[in-house]
Length: 195
Image (cartoon, rainbow, N blue to C red):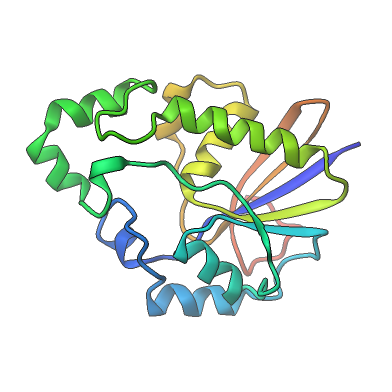
C-alpha cells in the first residue's frame, strides 16, 4: 500500500515576520487572506490532521478544514526561548545558540532537542503510513523539516538546511517504511505542477 501525506506549512504570522520563536500568535491579516485564497486548491483527502498551534489551526480553518478533529505533532519546544527573537537570544547567549544549531542533541533552551523532535515525528509518520488513503496535515515548519530529514535518510544536522516557506505543500509518498519527498509548492497552484 502506498501512503500519501501532504504536509502544509502554516500561513505567515507576526512571530514569523519578526524572526521570533513561535509564542502562540495567530496569523496576521495577510497570512489569513492568502490561506483563504488557497482554499479549494487541494484534492480531497481521507483525513486532515492539524498541529495544535493557533497558526496551524487558523490556516486549516482558512483552507476549509473546519471539521478537523485529529491532531498532528506540535513543533519544536524551544523552552525559555519561546516568544524571543533569534537575534536577542544570540546576543544574550551566542554559545548556546551556536551549540543548538550545530548539535542536534543539544537543548540549551530547556526544551526539546532536534533529535528528539525527529524521533517524535518519525513515530507519527510511521503511524500515518498505516492509514489508508491520502492525508493532509497542517503542521509547523519544524515538523516538515524533521519528516524530510528522516524520509531521505539525512543526518539530523541537515535539519537547519531545509527551508519551509509559509503556506507551502510538501508531499511524502511511500511504502514499507521508505519515503519519497516532493519539496514545496505554494498553495493555490495546480497540484499536478511540480517545481
